[in-house]
Amino acid sequence: MDFTAATADQVLAIRVNAGIDELASHERFSAATPDMVEAIVEGIGQFAAGEWAPLNRIGDKEGAILANGTVSLPDGFAAAYQAYVEQGWNAIAGPVEHGGQGLPFALAANVLENLGSANMAFSLLPMLTVGAIESLHHHGSPAQQALYLPRLISGEWSGTMNLTEPQAGSDVGALRTTATPRGDGTWSIKGTKIFITWGEHDLSGNVIHLVLARTPGAPAGTRGISLFLVPKYHVNADGSLGARNDLRCAGLEHKLGIMASPTCVMSFGDNDECIGELVGHENEGLKAMFTMMNSARINVGSQGVQIAERALQQARRYARDRVQSARAGAASREPVAIVEHPDVRRMLLRMRALTEGARALLYYTAGMVDRGALGIAGAQARADCLVPMIKAWGTDVGCEVASLGVQIHGGMGFVEETGAAQHYRDARIAPIYEGTNGIQAADLVTRKLGYEGGEVLTSLFADVVADCGDAPQLQALAQDCIEVARWMGEASIDDKLAGSVPFCTMASVAVAGWQLQRQVRDGAGGEQKAVVARYFNEHLAAEARGLKLAATAGADLLYALDAEALAG
Image (cartoon, rainbow, N blue to C red; front, side, top):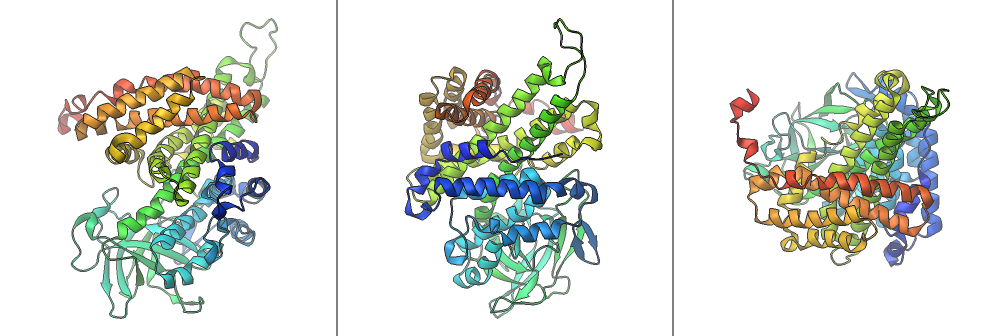
């Protein structure tokens, strides 16, 4: 169960795919020198391995516990979180004017990648806080920013995102939580939210809930949603804590995985005394929340990389240590380590190609986000198109690699003793939350496909075609993506949605493979990177090309049976 951060591959991806040297040439990110980058990547890797990784199995076995309205974590979590705060890791990309270090998002993404590989359930705590910081930084009032951002950026306080209700999952517009003016500029919040990650815990001094609710007379659906800041403890003007707000954790979900991440049912206003503040303007809450969600979607895509890396490391160790059977066709009949068998090698190479490809896509996306923040032409639009790819394909990769890790362990992977099963269980939530992967694919083909008349996506694929002459399957795949995108531009909405998931996979594999080829040309990855990228091109890209027919098949077959025949 040992974990070592993939520091060398991360530095390579940050340098080549995020383009950190180019980012550092801009005054805003000038502090991101090569020495600084290396110090951050190595430092957080060592911290994650030393402080958070040892708690991963403990957290899985013991989980979060709700008692007398308080959620507590196993021994060791509080000290590990305090060390994280004291060392400043939460403040990497926070705005300087509120106590952050102002470094590129790509480096903050690296912090979360390492924390998540070490302990995915635990890493959700800072991940949600990062999203809350983003939302308040872009939409909060100056007074809200001054009061709340310094403590969120330091990690002294944590943040949450409260969207989902029992009747309002993906259909956010169906929510019923209400916000009523109190006459003094504050609002009375009343309602129930479910699936609230780290909604209640005892590790930070305060929990700042960002809650979607309806104000009196608000329009129906998503047009009538507002965002409110609702603290666990009221905050005085000087930042000190007052009395507890009228909110509580009404229950914890019993889940498949991420046991140490308390997934809460939150009840607001049981006594009609839950007080919140409006963030931004009335009826514009979804816009403010999507600022938080876009950050979270990239970091959830990173969770696929995180679990893949952890499962890969464990599978490699097991394959080297487990001796079983002679190698077929070998002169010697002596049993060998299973890493010598062709199919185990196939699985390990596939795991590595998927993991490193997803990491390359992650940092390419993060680098585009940073360029968008700098105002570089076209960068934000490209980043917007990459978000559903890294979220959907990245989390699919996490599930596949974790599953292959179980397979390499054989029967020992299916029992809990080895820990391989935990990675598989933990990974499965990532394709679901922060917008299911089907929603990501739908976003790609219904919204992002139309950016600038389709030119944003087409130009992305054209770059892959132009730059992958040394990887013919990738080049052909990117050309296929262009053809599917043009077909979808003329297709009905049902036909687009029917092919959205295969198209999203095709697009993601094309861009990830391209970014791996860029790493190969850099040379720092040596022969190992060249072999991994060759496998990606010859196997994964070739497989993705086979999805073209599914992407353009249309919806007719899906509706050949009526609902009763299909689901009855």
